[in-house]
Structure formats: structure tokens, C-alpha cells
Image (cartoon, rainbow over all chains, first blue to last red; front, side, top):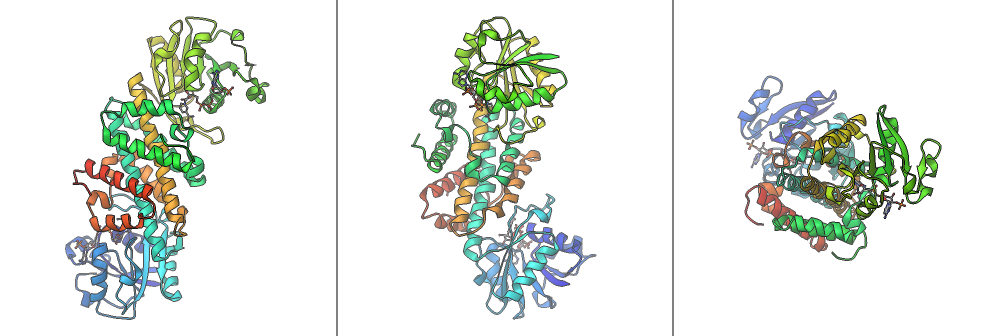
Length: 256
Length: 256
Ligand SMILES: NC(=O)c1ccc[n+]([C@@H]2O[C@H](COP(=O)([O-])OP(=O)(O)OC[C@H]3O[C@@H](n4cnc5c(N)ncnc54)[C@H](OP(=O)(O)O)[C@@H]3O)[C@@H](O)[C@H]2O)c1
Ligand SMILES: NC(=O)c1ccc[n+]([C@@H]2O[C@H](COP(=O)([O-])OP(=O)(O)OC[C@H]3O[C@@H](n4cnc5c(N)ncnc54)[C@H](OP(=O)(O)O)[C@@H]3O)[C@@H](O)[C@H]2O)c1
């Protein structure tokens, strides 16, 4: 049995709370948030607190709070020599106050409170300074059905950056496609199966091998037609040019 | 029963051939390619030809050949007043020689010969000049289980362009993420569930509503950290800057 105190009540904390409650060998002994109102709906199933001095002893204090709050909050925790971990992709392990045993439990997914999420699809990137602490965090991840990976702070930072490319930037390309199709009264919905297929393809094939299209084949005629269609929207055109150039750089083509 | 002659033997023709053969009310009466060798493996199950003058009468002649070949090939077909359709996203319906009844049967997906594809996930964009021909094409699509949509040439062109954004450009973002993670010895594999989740999210939610991350929240501190990590790779940095700006434009933020 792993006993956990959850600190924070945002997107990540809420999803982890649910997964921990559902796991057989995890006991959530307290749930802390500076603002207790957010936690009120859970008062019947778990002890809720908003006073750091009331925190009980536990195997792990898991901080799922805003990146900027992590450092000072770990400093304010009124105990030492216990395992304290945060869930951030971009905050270092040494930002946790050195009076604690330190760890990181970074779930590589996009969380929003509303959407359901199966933790089997949430790889947990784990870092710890002591092997014993590493195993606590690893067992915690295994108990909620997540794959795990040992990842140091530098690696975690580039994963977080790469996640911005495959999540936020990719989603923005979907948005641009939405604007482009709507401009002619065509339906964005028609693109949805292609969006899914594109994501599925790289589950087994490298993005390098999966690439196709006019930029890769250096089909100048099609690219010229596309650029012409984008003449009225220079910000879309700039994206077309830059990503075409990027594909051609990757696949050893000359510039447009 | 719809009788079809397939012309061309590339990615699209091969997938359509298989789907037509499996459909109850479609009869592939001939399969033409200028190079007969490609068709030899199918000689036992369908009549293969490489001589245009040997083409038999059919309800539909479906040209799945390179965009540049469509116009002249339709001109060379030794008959008139029969339904001839192409499968291209960017070629106009009037590029088909006017001696024919003309149509377009554009499958909005990414085809490669090796990968299996369920036509339930391939929306067919249909255009025809006569309502009777439209219905032949529509019934053909329905017979292979595909959703269909009436789409005119301008709409088809923007869909084809938008497909480049959600397929080729998105795949290139995956590639950049691959390069970024490998530069620190981190595993690209860890990003795969997030890639899939990002594509799934917009199946029900608009890309506008699905957006999250530092650019949307205007989290300058995180963006500065990311840009610093990209200092050594200016072409990745340029993509970061342009797509961040694009997100901020969409969501009414000021420039970086
Ligand atoms: N969202 C994701 O997709 C995701 C994915 C992986 C990792 N992460 C990481 O997980 C952590 C939490 O992210 P989130 O999305 O769950 O954030 P969130 O929904 O914005 O919630 C932030 C939580 O932090 C608390 N908080 C903020 N400042 C505080 C302070 N000064 N003192 C005490 N508590 C404070 C907030 O308390 P109040 O309720 O009182 O405001 C809230 O409970 C971050 O480190 C983030 O980088 C997020
Ligand atoms: N691939 C996709 O993902 C996709 C998706 C939607 C629509 N499309 C459209 O579907 C059509 C076919 O694409 P594809 O990917 O199947 O192409 P492909 O794999 O490159 O095959 C092209 C076919 O066209 C034939 N061909 C080329 N030039 C010709 C000429 N001058 N005369 C006669 N035949 C000629 C080739 O014959 P040989 O075998 O003799 O070279 C080959 O059979 C194009 O209009 C394309 O825009 C493609």
C-alpha cells in the first residue's frame, strides 16, 4: 500500500485523484488545496485540507500545482526527509527544497478536467535522486496502469517542448485547416478521418518514413497552386512556406 | 450493378480495385495501365489491358493516374458520351475532355500501397455535371462503405490544401518532435499517446476549443525556456515562433 497526499486541485490533480482512488494499493490520505471550495465535492470520500500544518505523514506528497508555485510551496511544507514529487515537465528536480527527498512524476499527456482519460495512455516520466524513491514513484504509476520511463531533467524538458509541437502546434494546424475549408464553404469534418489516420500512422512508422505529399516529392506545380490559394491569407502562407521548407530540409530537397 | 473500368495502377487505383472487388454490386470489367507488368499479379481475377483501344463499354471509367496525366489521357480515350471521372483533389472537372460525361471521385485520405485502409474512413468528395452521373458516383462510394459529400472544384481544391496541413505538415511536426527528443536521448515513443489523443480530441471538439498550452495562455516564462532550448536549431525555433504567433492570433493574444 502506498499512502499519498495530493497537493493542488487542478486538471492533473483531479485526474490523478480519481485514478488513485480506483487503484487497489494506493491510499489517498489527504487532499490539499489552498482554496478549499474546489475540494468540497470530495469531502465525503477523502479528508480535504487547506492548512499545510495539518498534513499527515505519508509515503509521498504529490504536488500538482502551477509550475511557478512548486519551489516556494515545497519550501513551506512543515516537515523534512519525506518524499516530495512534482508533476511538471519543465521544472527541475532541484527546484524542490533540499530538506525533502525529491522526485518527479510527469504525466506526458494533455489533461483537461472535463475529458476522460485512461492512464494506460499516459506515460509517466519518473525522476528521483534515490533508488528507493524511484521505486515508490514507479509502483505508483504501475498501480494506475501507466507505462513508465526513467527520464532526467534535461530529457523531461525536451519532451515537454516536443509535446508542444505534437499537441499545441499540431492542433493549430487543424485550426488553420478549419479556416481554409470554411473560407470556401467546405466542411472541416471531411478532414477528421485523415487527421486520425495521420496520428495512427506514426504509431508504427517513423514520421520520416510516413511523410508523403507535394513538398516531399518536390511537386512544384501543386505547391504553386497551393501558394496561390493562400495569397489572401499571408499568415497561412507563411506556415505553408516554412513547413514545406522544413520537409524539404528533412528529405534533402532544395528550397522552394 | 455498376460496371467499372479502372485506369491507373498506383496507390489509389490499387486500393479502389480491392474495395470494388469486395463490393457486391460493383463489377470491375477491366483494369488498364500503360505498363502492364504492374497488373500481372491480378491477371487471374480481372481482365488487364494496356491498350486504350481495347477498352470495353462500362458505366464508369475511373482514372486514378498522376494529376498531370489526366487531361491528355481523357482526350485519348477512343469513345465519347460515357462517364469518365478522376480521383484528384487539385484537378478541375473541366480538365476532363468535353467529349465525355464528366465527374470527380476524390477520396480524402492518404493512400500508400502497403497500408491497409478501411473505406469507412475515406470520405469521397463527389462532383458531376449531370445529376444522373452524380448518382452513379455516389452509389459507387456507398457500395464500398464510404461516406460521401457533394463538393465543387473550388471546395475540393481547398480541401486538398487543408489536407496538406493536417497530414504532411502535422507529420513534419512529429518529425521535428522526433529530432528534439533524440537530441537529448529521450524517447519519441513517449509522445505517441499524446499524438493520438490530440487527433482524437478534435473528432468531437473544434480545434479552437481544443487548444491549450503556453502560447494560448500567454505563458511567457515557459515560452522563453522553450526558445532557449531551440537556440542551436534555428529552423525548429522559426517553426516554434511562427506557430506560437499563429495560436496567439487565433486566440486574440499579442505577439511574443
Ligand atoms: N494540464 C496538463 O495537461 C499537464 C500535463 C502534464 C503536467 N502538467 C503539470 O502539472 C501541474 C499542474 O497543472 P494543472 O494543469 O493541473 O494546473 P491547473 O489546473 O492550473 O491547477 C493549478 C493548481 O495549482 C494551485 N496553485 C497555483 N498557485 C498556487 C500557489 N501559489 N500555492 C498553492 N497552490 C497553487 C491551484 O490552486 P487554486 O485552485 O487555489 O487556484 C490549482 O489547484 C503543473 O506543474 C503542470 O506543468 C500539466
Ligand atoms: N496517394 C494519395 O494519397 C491520393 C489521395 C487522394 C487522391 N489522389 C489522387 O489519385 C491519383 C493517383 O494518385 P496515386 O497516389 O495513386 O498515384 P501513383 O501511385 O503515383 O500512380 C500513378 C498512376 O498513374 C499512371 N500514369 C502516370 N502518368 C501517366 C501517363 N502519362 N499516362 C498513363 N498513365 C500514367 C502510372 O502508371 P505507371 O504505373 O505506368 O507509372 C500509375 O499507374 C492522383 O490524381 C492523385 O492526386 C491520391
